[in-house]
Image (tube, rainbow, N blue to C red):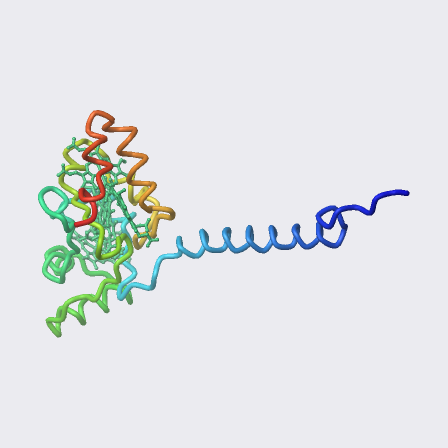
Length: 178
Ligand code: HEC
Ligand code: HEC
Ligand code: HEC
Ligand code: HEC
Ligand code: HEC
């Protein structure tokens, strides 16, 4: 007598598996896609055009050279140029309104790690790692776009690759969590 097929070889079960895989895959793809959509910013600031003009990253994000926070530019920095550079533009009218009311621009964070992670730009910039390596090519972006999968594994795999001689320290929990 022929043995009945085990449960995991039944056609219904296989279809079920295929569906589950499709749903999981679909979810993963849309999650990756969604995390790359930049949030709405108070002003649609065009990085591409400013970087194209030759404005250095550190002019607007000076903290990368010495501190934990890169910093975001306020109205003073924008107005330093835009008091002179005026053109008909709804986005520059928004800027002028913040300046007229002496209000800070409420930029929405994009590149951000949880509170319990300590990241400092200085050692990374000193090691010669380009901004682009971690933040993407700003000459192709207007507002900053979130970069996917910048999790613990991302930090650790670069540490292992770029600084193997310091691996003991750079993989120690207390180096990033304290
Ligand atoms: C180094 C000088 C400089 C600084 C600093 C600067 N800008 Fe600009 N910005 C310019 C110039 C020049 C243009 C015009 C570029 C063009 O037409 O391609 C421009 C264009 C723009 C535009 C596009 C206007 C349009 O619709 O055509 C926006 C929006 C803008 N800037 C916002 C800002 C904001 C917000 C800040 C501060 C975070 C800022 N800029 C800082 C020089 C500067
Ligand atoms: C090794 C990867 C890496 C490099 C290189 C790097 N960054 Fe970052 N950057 C990060 C991470 C991670 C964060 C999030 C930090 C946090 O939330 O504590 C961040 C945050 C930022 C922020 C958010 C605001 C803030 O105050 O922190 C800005 C702006 C920024 N980086 C600009 C730059 C610029 C400009 C450069 C080049 C001079 C640069 N970064 C180089 C990884 C990097
Ligand atoms: C003229 C000023 C200016 C220059 C030059 C500039 N940025 Fe920015 N940057 C901004 C402003 C304004 C924001 C906030 C709006 C946004 O998220 O795009 C920002 C946001 C960012 C963020 C996200 C910060 C956060 O809070 O999460 C990163 C990363 C960043 N910039 C990287 C760079 C890099 C790398 C360069 C050089 C290639 C650069 N920027 C040049 C003005 C500037
Ligand atoms: C692209 C590669 C790269 C990535 C990504 C990266 N790092 Fe690093 N990191 C380095 C290198 C290289 C050093 C060693 C610098 C030196 O020579 O002191 C370092 C050093 C450090 C240090 C030690 C600083 C000190 O004071 O000695 C800390 C803390 C750190 N990284 C945290 C992080 C965290 C947190 C992340 C992820 C959010 C991260 N790094 C992502 C390359 C990277
Ligand atoms: C090079 C930096 C770095 C080192 C070293 C490191 N972590 Fe992390 N860790 C991170 C970053 C960045 C995150 C946040 C992103 C994420 O959740 O992956 C994180 C997240 C976590 C989380 C939260 C995970 C979650 O899903 O919310 C735990 C728990 C954790 N780390 C434990 C550890 C332990 C235990 C060690 C030592 C064996 C360690 N980490 C070493 C960078 C680091």
